[in-house]
Image (cartoon, rainbow, N blue to C red; front, side):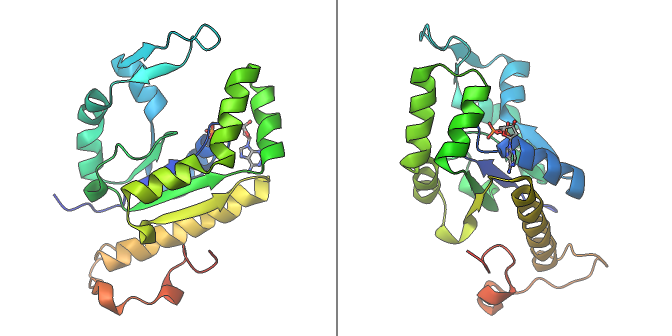
Length: 201
Ligand code: DAT
């Protein structure tokens, strides 16, 4: 089935601003915020970890997770909110946004969430070592990946605007632009400067 709207992953270290971006983007575009946390809860597919410091962390059965969301992904128009990205089949993904955040800002956000020292340090290391950027690069084509900074409220507005423009371009290219009969452009015709996601890095 051909998707009429793109599937977009919003990923990154916990606390960087994934949910904030997904909610804003969903409200601006009408695409569906697919919170994997909610899917895991709804279908009860997470096992509690044995870590006493972190009993709320769930180890997710990825095969069952994919079964639960496969139809949604095939339909398209999903904004996937999750702190991992390499489990989603590349053929069903159109854009991967890795949200990034300054260490000091992230530390304060995670502290405010009440994270213990160990969990806080693990997540800080994850951001410093660029774990999610690397995971995205290992799983998807470089051209599909974009890093977005999220330190201030204005960053969210700017990022969401960029993604909105990108969605418009995607729909035009796939013949789903406003007006209906826009012809799909061949991939070879596309110039980087036409692309709102990659224009400014
Ligand atoms: P995540 O879903 O990645 O765990 P979140 O969206 O829940 O992160 O955001 C964590 C906290 O940080 C939350 O209180 C909102 C705030 N926040 C996120 N991005 C922000 C930004 N760009 N400017 C100001 N606050 C932000």
